Image (cartoon, rainbow, N blue to C red; front, top):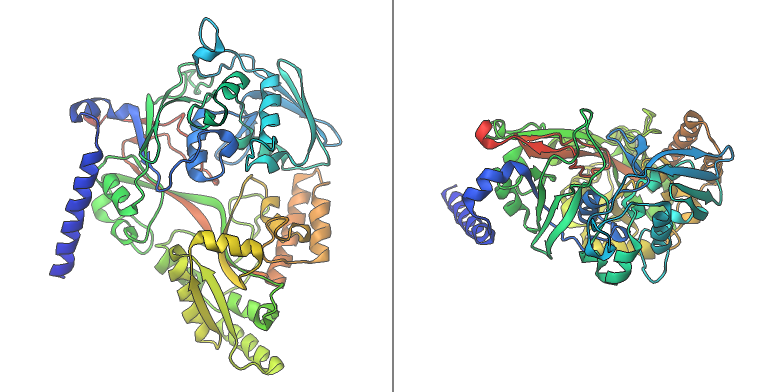
Length: 545
């Protein structure tokens, strides 16, 4: 124990010295203005501040502060106005007409060549932004967002019309994505590819400084159009400061010392230091830290590549046996410190319309053993074996499943490899089984069903399992024509039940958003997409606490 304690002290001093060398602000100045600045860290670097490249969380979180779209989502995933103050949808669900606000200004920039160095957003700015999104020369990873669009046009300065190729009920949710942000043509044309590091938008914060891989600073946009319920202009904060320390232990130390305001992850290296096994804060952090949890539109699962020649993968008996063969409740309690909801209801996660309490696979080791014995008897294969590919972050979960399945007669081999390798091999159909996450791009359960539509088989789409079911396909196609929300959700539920019965996957758990903030942070809310919304956040001055 003494050696372990000494090692921890040495590591603590080393990390502290490293972090101290990164501090560039004078301490007294920082203390005086700390409540005006929101600070957080990303383990992964921001690759672009251009919303056309807002593909991952670091990029999305940053561009979320800088840009606006036609519509936005509230914390309950309801679609509400943003730059468009209202919209109309034609009876055939093909034409969307958006009426824009006429009081929204771009962030100031000398290139606008106006007296006040800015200009008003008009409908043709959206036409340009959409043109750019689908331009092959730009090569935006978000160009798929407009694949259902036939055409779009600016009718006048405040009317923007979009016509779809066919009805798509989730379309408005797509329009809330950062990919669909409005950008100014004259600024983008001037900077070209360097718009990534010279962003001009309409968001609550404006770009100030980016030292790549080190820090990013945003300042309050004094022209921002949104106000709170009391008529006060948003945002409340003066600035946002983002660092990019890759080491999660270093990030935790920064948070524990009060140097950053938000901890948005629960890493294995410190989870037991911060939380009890049941997911409660340890006593030593209760006075300093606030914890909040909520549904996250992310389903964690094991997938089977059904076009595999391996007999064990093709067997629905073994796939069902794995589903029954381990205790999801126990897995969440002991390996996730209570963060997450056991996936016993299907693939559609809790927190999105379309989720039902329909029974999936309960923990039943005796049933799992009987299914495996039946497989052995029918095939003559007395030593069935399945390989599961995973990255290091999920190794403990896969090894837990491995131990549980061995008890009922099935050998599981866990192959740990880099996540980038898993992605490549999934697309190529070179993994018989794999651990994966499915995070919603937009708030509609259709997003969780598209990976099982046969026309989406990789490499043409995200159907990594190559699952094919004619009835599922027909329900999926019919759902696009249903205007009644409740009826469409019934279709979604039927599709989810097919996934349960055919077992192309093993649902593990529905993830949860878990955020740790300093006690003086106010107004930060959770949302099921885990987006960071800072326009209503404020901090109490430490001098006043």
